[in-house]
Length: 371
Image (tube, rainbow, N blue to C red; front, top):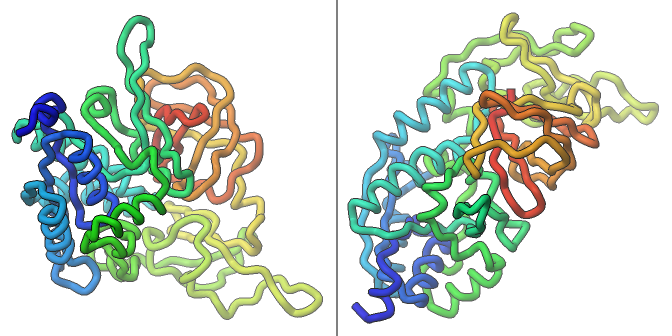
């Protein structure tokens, strides 16, 4: 080992077979770290299907490690994933909410199980290919670690990382946080990495590109019920509230129902707007801006604050879903694990089970689960 890498110490990089984690490993090697790649297998059911073959990802990760000259090993977290992430995922769907498994996976697997495993391998630090940044500051005479948005706003992933704590952030590096995605692709191509043009994975690893309802069908029972308008008119039947999310437009099964029409014979699209668990009713409304789809405030529970304590009441910005611009809001008293937000402008399709994540400029403060 060179004197430089001895000085920098050992860093274990989560390598998924994708271009982001591959460039992350290379950058850290350039910076003088002793880099070890770790490939996480998180799902085993039907893994040989066309949708999510971790075998191909492992081959890609291993060939990248070979090209950049780092060691790599595989670790199986499938049992942890099923217990800690997937069971909760199904519980939330059964209760009519729409959870975000990526948030859960980061909190429970990538920065718990993976971090613990990396430490047993003699790691000083871990790293992933997330587009986010960590900054160390002093607060009341103490060291504090802040989570910041990635510089490339179109790729920023701080939303998915908002449940990390001080102990986790102090041992984590995100080398891509300072780079635009285009630069990451350029580096991969220049290095001749075998996955330089591999497309980004979308959605949840174990689900891959498969039809979501078909996947859920295997784990959740169907429970048919009525689809109604706010006025109580029955338009059709749903197969289970778990299979629908607020703001959903396609796949409602009422495509032929025109509803209120304009003078020219056209009509607004239908959207899922409310779920009544007690009566097993899905309510749908016409038009993207129907009042039932707009919310001025929300309450969130299961709060997690990156600093270890809640922010003061006041003006902030928040996201209620990943692909959303920051929305100006006021934070009420954050107490006992819950908080409330009042937005300057009504927010569209605020969905129970999703995460409300709070920001002060580029600093991600944490968040909670929308109730």
